[in-house]
Length: 89
Image (cartoon, rainbow, N blue to C red; front, side, top):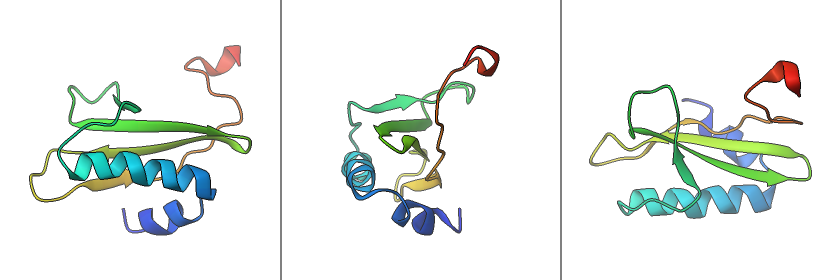
């Protein structure tokens, strides 16, 4: 979590603005349309936002389990091709 802001600032501006807008919803207690429950975490406590750019696909993953703060777990994962089944990509 220590490098989340640094990682976020390294993203393309358009992606960073999109993530910032979606995370603003979370800070206000709402859920942006692009925020989806991350599978494998047993509930709606961990969400992800996915944005595509010509450089790849970017993901911001965050949790909303805490009342007073939004904690960003991961700010960047880049995939040239995203597939839940890597052997088929």
